[in-house]
Length: 251
Image (cartoon, rainbow, N blue to C red; front, side):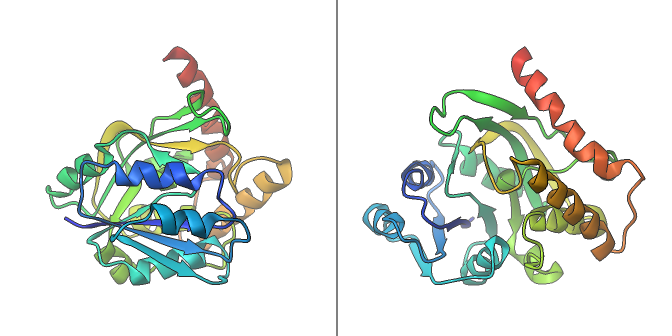
């Protein structure tokens, strides 16, 4: 099974080397790594070219945001499965993609796992532990979702149900997950293991204004998909994350 790993980047010179190394060190070797670079002005592109091998594709040029860039990568992908790995994140161990490929042998449409948030400078320091858990559609109504970087989806599902809606600037991944898992009811398999280490400080994290924007886009995602949440659904979504800090402390 061929897996296409898509990494969107712009001025990611400080972190992208670790991202590339984590992909190249995977025990599963049938991989292509597609980089969608939004006109970096640092040496991001030089690092990709120097570290990349035969299975690396570099797509350069301006795009209309993160989700437009991901869609560009999906259109160029030749693998059966699509993986999204941010340019400042990295796989947690070298058997992540091997385990994912084996899980797809059961015939499911998507595979997902767990994620940890780490400090930007010292990635050995865990801040949050996102234990996703097994899937039940009703969980969405209680604020549940899947961490974007640990969700692996067959390319045929994108072809059938559509790509990311790039009118979203922050919550396009939530819109897609809601559409595919909750609305379209694609089949999934949960692997109870940490797959990705994510640095804190991403697009949807941080300031109060960003959190308000996320909440507004989350609300629009339900409306766009013609499905209705509970009155408390969109408030529970950020509140659920609070438990990830306490879960980590108990580990």
